[in-house]
Length: 72
Image 1: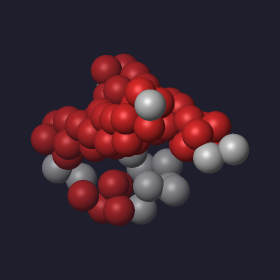
Image 2: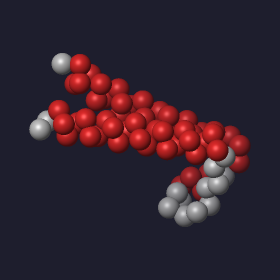
Image 3: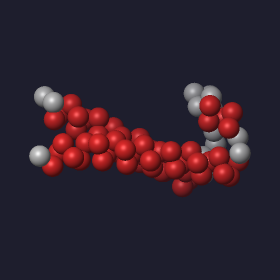
Image 4: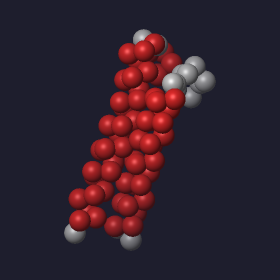
């Protein structure tokens, strides 16, 4: 079924978009400590990085919801 194929595509695609936003932040600032301590408010993202970050998280969340839907 096509939903079984879409699930890993969403999970991997969302992870790649999320990691791309982190790489853009690292290229711009070089602040590895802020990435490692992500629960602190040291990461100041640009608008583009922030959008990519949230879009990546949303796509991964859709993959997780689809996983529950597929196995229900």
